[in-house]
Length: 281
Picture 1: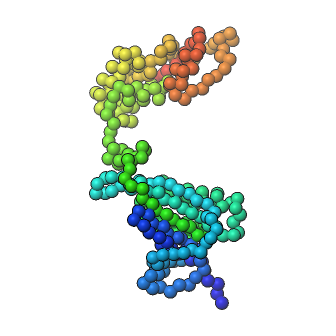
Picture 2: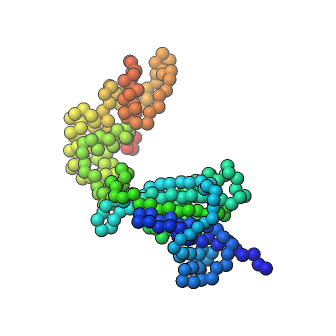
Picture 3: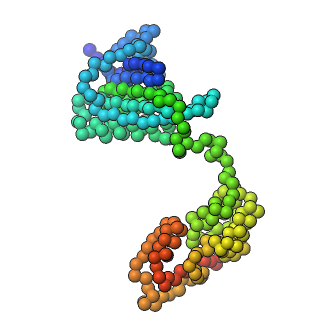
Protein backbone atom coordinates (compact mmCIF):
# COMPACT_ATOMS: atom_id res chain seq x y z
CA UNK A 1 0.00 0.00 0.00
CA UNK A 2 1.42 3.37 -1.04
CA UNK A 3 2.38 5.74 1.73
CA UNK A 4 0.00 8.66 2.14
CA UNK A 5 1.72 12.00 1.58
CA UNK A 6 1.49 14.71 4.20
CA UNK A 7 -0.88 17.56 3.50
CA UNK A 8 -1.00 21.05 4.99
CA UNK A 9 -4.48 21.65 6.38
CA UNK A 10 -5.95 24.95 7.53
CA UNK A 11 -8.91 24.83 9.92
CA UNK A 12 -10.72 27.64 11.80
CA UNK A 13 -10.43 27.18 15.56
CA UNK A 14 -12.44 30.02 17.05
CA UNK A 15 -13.78 33.44 16.16
CA UNK A 16 -14.95 36.37 18.29
CA UNK A 17 -16.07 39.90 17.51
CA UNK A 18 -12.48 41.13 17.26
CA UNK A 19 -10.31 38.02 16.85
CA UNK A 20 -9.84 34.97 14.66
CA UNK A 21 -7.75 31.90 15.44
CA UNK A 22 -6.74 29.37 12.80
CA UNK A 23 -4.79 26.12 12.96
CA UNK A 24 -2.42 25.09 10.18
CA UNK A 25 -1.16 21.53 10.61
CA UNK A 26 0.67 18.82 8.73
CA UNK A 27 -1.14 15.47 8.42
CA UNK A 28 -0.89 12.35 6.28
CA UNK A 29 -4.52 12.13 5.13
CA UNK A 30 -6.54 11.55 1.97
CA UNK A 31 -9.76 13.49 2.58
CA UNK A 32 -12.62 13.66 0.12
CA UNK A 33 -13.79 17.02 -1.14
CA UNK A 34 -17.12 18.25 0.21
CA UNK A 35 -18.95 21.48 0.91
CA UNK A 36 -16.78 21.85 4.05
CA UNK A 37 -13.45 20.64 2.66
CA UNK A 38 -11.64 22.29 -0.25
CA UNK A 39 -8.74 20.35 -1.78
CA UNK A 40 -6.46 22.68 -3.72
CA UNK A 41 -4.93 21.69 -7.03
CA UNK A 42 -2.36 22.95 -9.52
CA UNK A 43 0.37 25.03 -7.88
CA UNK A 44 -1.38 24.58 -4.54
CA UNK A 45 -1.62 20.79 -4.58
CA UNK A 46 -1.11 19.42 -1.08
CA UNK A 47 -3.06 22.21 0.63
CA UNK A 48 -6.48 21.57 2.15
CA UNK A 49 -8.92 24.15 3.52
CA UNK A 50 -11.22 22.74 6.18
CA UNK A 51 -14.24 25.01 6.63
CA UNK A 52 -15.43 23.51 9.91
CA UNK A 53 -16.54 26.22 12.33
CA UNK A 54 -14.67 24.86 15.35
CA UNK A 55 -11.57 22.78 15.82
CA UNK A 56 -9.95 20.97 18.71
CA UNK A 57 -6.35 20.08 17.98
CA UNK A 58 -6.01 17.62 20.84
CA UNK A 59 -2.60 19.00 21.79
CA UNK A 60 -2.21 19.29 25.53
CA UNK A 61 1.46 20.29 25.72
CA UNK A 62 2.36 24.00 25.61
CA UNK A 63 3.55 25.38 22.31
CA UNK A 64 7.26 24.99 21.61
CA UNK A 65 7.69 28.63 20.56
CA UNK A 66 5.53 31.74 20.31
CA UNK A 67 6.04 35.02 18.45
CA UNK A 68 3.82 38.07 18.22
CA UNK A 69 3.94 41.30 16.24
CA UNK A 70 1.67 44.20 15.33
CA UNK A 71 0.37 45.54 12.05
CA UNK A 72 -1.63 48.67 11.31
CA UNK A 73 -4.64 48.23 9.05
CA UNK A 74 -5.65 51.30 7.05
CA UNK A 75 -9.28 51.79 6.07
CA UNK A 76 -9.62 52.60 2.39
CA UNK A 77 -12.83 54.51 3.08
CA UNK A 78 -11.86 56.65 6.08
CA UNK A 79 -8.05 56.41 6.24
CA UNK A 80 -8.21 55.48 9.93
CA UNK A 81 -5.70 53.04 11.44
CA UNK A 82 -6.54 49.91 13.40
CA UNK A 83 -3.83 48.13 15.34
CA UNK A 84 -3.88 44.36 15.04
CA UNK A 85 -1.85 41.85 17.04
CA UNK A 86 -0.78 38.73 15.17
CA UNK A 87 0.44 35.76 17.18
CA UNK A 88 2.10 32.56 15.97
CA UNK A 89 2.35 29.45 18.18
CA UNK A 90 4.61 26.64 16.98
CA UNK A 91 4.62 22.89 17.58
CA UNK A 92 7.41 20.87 15.96
CA UNK A 93 7.89 17.20 15.19
CA UNK A 94 9.68 15.08 17.84
CA UNK A 95 12.76 14.83 15.60
CA UNK A 96 13.55 18.51 16.21
CA UNK A 97 15.43 19.05 19.46
CA UNK A 98 14.27 21.67 21.99
CA UNK A 99 17.41 23.72 21.32
CA UNK A 100 16.66 23.92 17.59
CA UNK A 101 13.01 24.92 17.92
CA UNK A 102 13.44 28.64 18.75
CA UNK A 103 15.84 29.14 15.83
CA UNK A 104 13.48 27.41 13.42
CA UNK A 105 10.56 29.53 14.64
CA UNK A 106 12.59 32.72 14.20
CA UNK A 107 13.67 31.71 10.69
CA UNK A 108 10.04 31.05 9.74
CA UNK A 109 8.99 34.40 11.21
CA UNK A 110 11.71 36.34 9.35
CA UNK A 111 10.59 34.90 6.02
CA UNK A 112 6.94 35.52 6.77
CA UNK A 113 7.36 39.22 7.60
CA UNK A 114 10.06 39.99 5.03
CA UNK A 115 9.43 43.58 3.81
CA UNK A 116 10.11 42.56 0.21
CA UNK A 117 6.94 40.47 -0.05
CA UNK A 118 4.93 41.04 3.12
CA UNK A 119 1.30 39.97 2.46
CA UNK A 120 -1.05 42.93 2.14
CA UNK A 121 -4.25 41.09 3.08
CA UNK A 122 -5.49 38.17 5.17
CA UNK A 123 -5.68 35.73 2.27
CA UNK A 124 -2.09 36.43 1.26
CA UNK A 125 -0.93 36.17 4.88
CA UNK A 126 -2.50 32.74 5.47
CA UNK A 127 -1.44 31.53 2.03
CA UNK A 128 2.20 32.46 2.68
CA UNK A 129 2.13 30.66 6.04
CA UNK A 130 0.81 27.49 4.41
CA UNK A 131 3.28 27.59 1.51
CA UNK A 132 6.25 28.11 3.83
CA UNK A 133 5.11 25.23 6.00
CA UNK A 134 4.50 22.99 2.98
CA UNK A 135 7.70 23.53 1.02
CA UNK A 136 10.42 24.62 3.44
CA UNK A 137 9.71 23.99 7.12
CA UNK A 138 9.14 20.25 7.04
CA UNK A 139 9.71 19.79 10.79
CA UNK A 140 6.88 22.18 11.68
CA UNK A 141 3.97 19.99 12.75
CA UNK A 142 1.36 22.56 13.69
CA UNK A 143 0.98 26.32 13.78
CA UNK A 144 -1.72 28.28 15.54
CA UNK A 145 -2.38 31.68 13.98
CA UNK A 146 -4.23 34.36 15.94
CA UNK A 147 -5.40 37.69 14.51
CA UNK A 148 -6.64 40.11 17.17
CA UNK A 149 -7.78 43.66 16.46
CA UNK A 150 -7.09 46.10 19.30
CA UNK A 151 -9.11 49.08 18.11
CA UNK A 152 -8.34 52.40 16.46
CA UNK A 153 -4.85 53.78 16.95
CA UNK A 154 -2.55 56.51 15.75
CA UNK A 155 -0.32 55.46 12.84
CA UNK A 156 3.15 54.21 13.82
CA UNK A 157 5.94 56.84 13.84
CA UNK A 158 7.57 55.31 10.76
CA UNK A 159 4.35 55.40 8.73
CA UNK A 160 4.63 57.69 5.71
CA UNK A 161 1.91 58.01 3.13
CA UNK A 162 2.97 57.30 -0.47
CA UNK A 163 1.82 60.76 -1.53
CA UNK A 164 4.25 62.30 0.96
CA UNK A 165 7.13 60.15 -0.25
CA UNK A 166 6.65 61.38 -3.80
CA UNK A 167 6.68 65.05 -2.81
CA UNK A 168 9.83 67.13 -3.34
CA UNK A 169 10.89 68.62 0.02
CA UNK A 170 10.83 72.40 0.14
CA UNK A 171 14.23 74.05 0.00
CA UNK A 172 15.56 75.70 3.13
CA UNK A 173 18.94 76.99 4.24
CA UNK A 174 19.14 74.21 6.83
CA UNK A 175 18.56 71.48 4.23
CA UNK A 176 21.22 72.99 1.98
CA UNK A 177 23.64 73.25 4.91
CA UNK A 178 22.94 69.63 5.90
CA UNK A 179 23.87 68.46 2.41
CA UNK A 180 27.09 70.49 2.46
CA UNK A 181 28.06 69.10 5.87
CA UNK A 182 27.32 65.53 4.76
CA UNK A 183 29.69 66.02 1.81
CA UNK A 184 32.47 67.74 3.82
CA UNK A 185 35.35 68.12 3.03
CA UNK A 186 34.20 67.60 -0.55
CA UNK A 187 32.60 70.64 -2.18
CA UNK A 188 29.19 70.63 -3.86
CA UNK A 189 28.15 72.52 -6.95
CA UNK A 190 24.80 74.13 -7.62
CA UNK A 191 24.11 71.36 -10.13
CA UNK A 192 24.70 68.76 -7.40
CA UNK A 193 21.86 70.25 -5.34
CA UNK A 194 19.55 70.48 -8.35
CA UNK A 195 20.23 66.85 -9.29
CA UNK A 196 19.88 65.43 -5.76
CA UNK A 197 16.98 67.47 -4.39
CA UNK A 198 15.17 68.62 -7.56
CA UNK A 199 15.32 72.27 -6.50
CA UNK A 200 15.64 75.17 -8.93
CA UNK A 201 19.07 76.71 -9.55
CA UNK A 202 17.84 80.14 -8.50
CA UNK A 203 16.60 78.87 -5.12
CA UNK A 204 19.83 76.96 -4.51
CA UNK A 205 21.99 79.99 -5.33
CA UNK A 206 19.93 82.20 -3.00
CA UNK A 207 20.33 79.73 -0.13
CA UNK A 208 24.07 79.32 -0.71
CA UNK A 209 24.68 83.06 -0.88
CA UNK A 210 22.75 83.56 2.35
CA UNK A 211 24.79 80.83 4.08
CA UNK A 212 28.01 82.41 2.80
CA UNK A 213 26.99 85.79 4.23
CA UNK A 214 26.48 84.09 7.60
CA UNK A 215 29.96 82.57 7.43
CA UNK A 216 28.69 78.99 7.17
CA UNK A 217 29.85 78.19 3.64
CA UNK A 218 32.73 79.22 1.40
CA UNK A 219 32.77 79.55 -2.39
CA UNK A 220 35.72 77.52 -3.69
CA UNK A 221 35.12 78.52 -7.31
CA UNK A 222 32.21 79.65 -9.43
CA UNK A 223 29.12 77.78 -8.21
CA UNK A 224 31.07 75.37 -5.98
CA UNK A 225 30.73 75.54 -2.19
CA UNK A 226 32.16 73.85 0.90
CA UNK A 227 31.40 74.10 4.61
CA UNK A 228 33.25 76.98 6.27
CA UNK A 229 34.97 75.48 9.27
CA UNK A 230 35.00 77.43 12.53
CA UNK A 231 38.76 76.84 12.84
CA UNK A 232 41.09 78.45 10.32
CA UNK A 233 41.34 76.05 7.41
CA UNK A 234 44.11 76.18 4.84
CA UNK A 235 42.98 75.15 1.37
CA UNK A 236 45.90 73.64 -0.55
CA UNK A 237 46.40 71.80 -3.82
CA UNK A 238 49.00 69.49 -2.29
CA UNK A 239 49.17 68.38 1.32
CA UNK A 240 52.28 69.91 2.97
CA UNK A 241 55.15 67.85 4.33
CA UNK A 242 55.29 68.17 8.09
CA UNK A 243 58.46 68.07 10.15
CA UNK A 244 58.86 65.27 12.66
CA UNK A 245 57.98 67.60 15.55
CA UNK A 246 54.65 68.43 13.92
CA UNK A 247 53.72 64.90 12.95
CA UNK A 248 50.46 63.73 14.56
CA UNK A 249 50.80 61.02 17.19
CA UNK A 250 47.21 59.75 17.06
CA UNK A 251 44.47 59.56 14.44
CA UNK A 252 40.80 60.27 15.08
CA UNK A 253 38.51 59.20 12.24
CA UNK A 254 35.08 60.82 12.04
CA UNK A 255 32.22 60.20 9.63
CA UNK A 256 30.05 63.24 10.33
CA UNK A 257 30.86 66.93 10.29
CA UNK A 258 29.39 67.37 13.78
CA UNK A 259 31.78 64.66 15.03
CA UNK A 260 34.72 66.57 13.57
CA UNK A 261 33.58 69.70 15.39
CA UNK A 262 33.42 67.77 18.67
CA UNK A 263 36.96 66.45 18.19
CA UNK A 264 38.28 69.88 17.21
CA UNK A 265 36.80 71.38 20.37
CA UNK A 266 39.07 69.14 22.46
CA UNK A 267 42.28 69.98 20.58
CA UNK A 268 44.74 72.83 21.04
CA UNK A 269 47.13 74.35 18.50
CA UNK A 270 45.42 72.57 15.65
CA UNK A 271 46.07 73.01 11.96
CA UNK A 272 43.50 72.00 9.36
CA UNK A 273 44.34 71.43 5.71
CA UNK A 274 41.85 70.70 2.94
CA UNK A 275 43.17 69.52 -0.41
CA UNK A 276 41.16 71.00 -3.25
CA UNK A 277 41.62 70.79 -7.00
CA UNK A 278 39.31 71.96 -9.74
CA UNK A 279 38.09 69.62 -12.46
CA UNK A 280 40.80 68.90 -15.02
CA UNK A 281 43.76 69.48 -12.70
